[in-house]
Length: 358
Image (cartoon, rainbow, N blue to C red; front, side, top):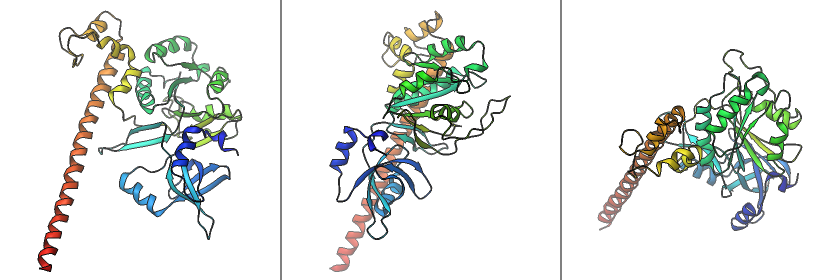
């Protein structure tokens, strides 16, 4: 397996050269287990574990290597086992807020060129949910793409496609059928050799079936979807990286049950570009677009230029992101207070030692 097929390029080569150590070699993480990783590289595929130093750093920061990361590896002299010493600088990363009340980033995968939001034309079709996924996609730094699967199950799929294109302004939207193969050629051309795409979306939209179609049925098993709810059965239970026969790379992910945003307001400039542009005409620069006089966004809502559902989703996401920013500030202040408490305790201990030595 040639490393260039895995997405190796000058960006990572330069990063590797800067962090190079004797006997080190690069490899890409293709799967993560509880205590180890599956690595793909010039040596084919092999298992690797984190060094003790790196594991301690990861436990302290919560930032463990993820699927798509490029790892710096060496071999243990006596056993020849592969050891991960660190990961190279990430070009892109797909993240969400960790589920629950805590304030932590959960990195789903890294170093994708294309962030593919996968939806479906069945009961799962929901342009508001796609807007939410697109905010994560724009925030990742990768090129967003929307793929609507199961066009074979709806006679009115073209109308739904048009509505989705309005909700995903500025983003290409493909209508495909993984079951029949319709439209798959366009997706194959986008995921060109050496380019990495991540498939993410709700359970049951057919991510694994798409991967099956793209790979010729080589990789992923699929299970039947519930007919009434359109809910899948998590046919993908782990994140994994695959190389397609045409040379493209796909990171398949389990369906996301919770879409908790991890982004800043700049991400909304992509998923809500029309509203952000209209907001430049508001009378007040800090307009909330809810009740202020001279609000251009409210005016566009009233005259029908902006759809109500689109507007309400924008307001909801904006409030959520601003709440996250406040949490981030509080979290930073808490960590700063803890740091100075530790420094204070250390200084008091030094004074006690000095007094004891007199």
